[in-house]
Length: 164
Image (cartoon, rainbow, N blue to C red; front, side, top):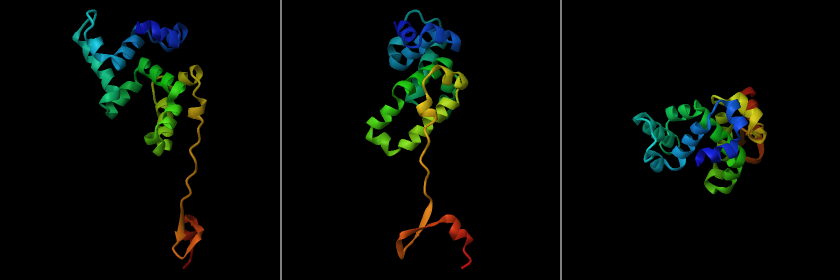
């Protein structure tokens, strides 16, 4: 069932261009969404499959940098990530008050994830990621204020170049 859903979402031609089978992407989706049911399947070929299910589940629910790198090295997981960001990445940030507190960090993280994976060059051709990848972070004004004069900012460079 998840394989059929994955083919509907991604399409057979895209999966073929990316070198991902419908079985692989279905396995990853199932491992993320319903790991207990995946573990109970009779058609699992080995203990290795069970370990893979838990590893995929842990990508999201037991974070580590090593797991993040493994996720970004996985073509099916990269496709799922790109689809998620394309479809709801920035909207989700704006719907969550907690995420909005760190809005710029989430935008930057999305850019890094999309540029630091095993399919980064191909994703930009296949997904509509322009609004994420071309989003410019606002410039930060690093200026010092004099305690006596709250109305006037003094740029850092003028402080360094002064001859007092």
